[in-house]
Image 1: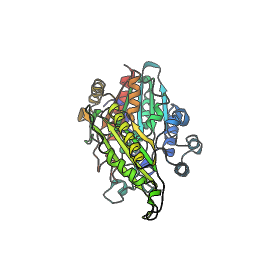
Image 2 (image 1 turned 60 degrees about the horizontal axis):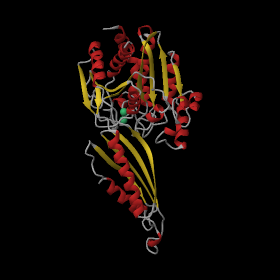
Image 3 (image 1 turned 45 degrees about the horizontal axis):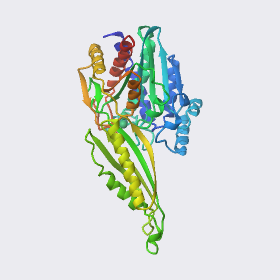
Image 4 (image 1 turned 30 degrees about the horizontal axis):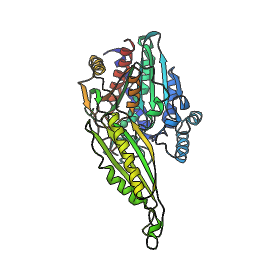
Length: 433
Ligand SMILES: [Zn+2]
Ligand SMILES: [Zn+2]
C-alpha cells in the first residue's frame, strides 16, 4: 500500500475519536460554534492560512438564520463545551464558516474541497441496538443529532487537511478547504460562495457519506441529478374579529393560506424536466371563536435544472399572492433556503475513478448515480464551473443502519480512513495537472 494510504489507515483511531466527540456535541445550522472553533484551531496548528466569520461569509446572503436568542444560547453552550470564547465571539451572528488555504512550493492547480458541519433537529435513539447508545457517544442534547453523517465529514476533512500538510513536498499548486455551516435546509453555501472564495478554484470536489453510496468499500464518482430547490416561508396577516357577531369585519388568513396550499399543488408541470412542490407546514388561527388573522406556511419547490425551479418559484409566488388577495389579507414571502442545479462532469468523474481504482482500497468504483435530492454544495460547484473550473459531487460508500435524518442513523466508521486516503490522493494528483 502506498505511503499516503498507509498514513490514512493509521489515522483511523483519531478519526473515530473525533467523529464520536462531534457526535456527542451536535450543532444545528448556523450554530456550529464549537465545531468551527475546533476546525480553526486544528487548521492553524497544521500551518494553514485560516479565515472565518466575516472574512468568508456575506451576511446579506445568509438564509434561514435562527433567532438571536437561539444563536446566543448556542454560543454559550459551545463555550461551556470547550470552544475558544474569542473565536466564538468572532463568529457571532451565526458566521460559523471556515476556510483553510495551503500553497505549495511546486506550481500547479488550485484544488477546492468542501465539508459540511451541521446536525439535524432530531432526537437520538437511546436503545441499546443503536451503536452510539451502546458505546456511550450519543448526542448530549435533546432534539439535536448528527443523523446525516456530517460528524464524519468534519473528521474526514480535518484528516485530509493533516495528510496534505504532512505530505506538502509531494503536493502542487494550492489547496483550499471549506467547512460549511447550515447545509441542512440548503442555507449556508450561498453566503460563502458570494464572498468570492471559490472563484480561483480549478478543480472542486464535494461529496457525502452514504445516501446512494450504501455499500462498504465503494465509491460513486459522480452523483448527478441534484435538483435545484428553493425554500419559501409565507406569512399571511389578516384581521381578527368575533366569529359570531362580526365575521364580516375580519380578514381570514386561515382561508387564504388554505386556498394557497391547494392552488400550489396544482401548478402545471414543466415539459422540460422534473419538478416538485411541497407545502410542508401550515399553521393558522388562534382560537375557535376568533376569525383567524395569522397563518404561517412553509413550502419548497424543486426542479431538474435552475430554470425549471425558477418557473416553480414564480408560479408559487403568484398563487400565494393571488390567494391572499382573494381573502383581502397581506402576505410576506421570504426565502429560507435554496440551491441551484449544476452541470454533471462525467469526464472529471472518469479521472477521479482512475485515482480511486489505483488506490486499491475500493471493491467497487461506480461512475454515476442519479440522486434526486438537493444539496447546496451545488452553489460552490456552479460558481466554480461559471469561472471556468471543474467540479463534481461524489458518494463515499458505507453501510448505514437507518435512513439519513432518522433517529437511528449510523454509518460504518471504516469508510473514514478510506475517504481520507482517496481524497488526499485527489489533492496530490489534480494539483499536478
Ligand atoms: Zn442531511
Ligand atoms: Zn448531509
